[in-house]
Amino acid sequence: MNKTTQDAVNQYELLNPLLTGIYKEMQELSKKKPDSPLNAFKVKAINRILEPIKEMLKMENTHAFLDVLDVDEMPTNSDVVLVLNQYMNAMKIFYEKYYTYNSKDGHKWRIQS
Image (cartoon, rainbow, N blue to C red; front, side, top):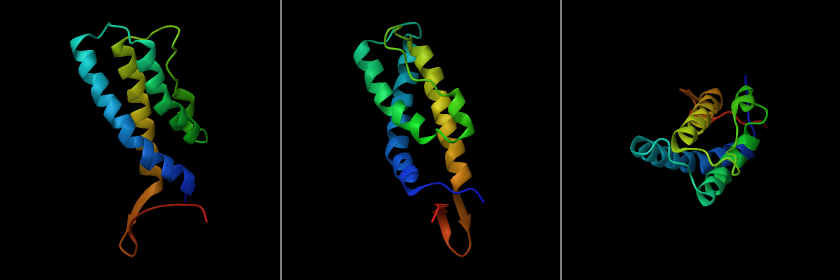
């Protein structure tokens, strides 16, 4: 049975709502102006969320598909949505792998002892 660490669960619970919020915000921006580039402030702010997620998922198979944004290339809104979508899916896979339900204990994380 797969188990994760308490630190990874804490990171997940902190970062997943932040990731979800920025993903929704960027989806809206991308609908209006998909080819508009982000400014350096936004790229850095998004990377402050992505970098710890990438570190948290370093032992997961999805890690190889996770990139942070390049501040020198100024990605467009649609580029950012693509990258954030990969992170959203990686977080979903993490959740489904380590969060479980059974009739005895209810819902809980499978954490290493």
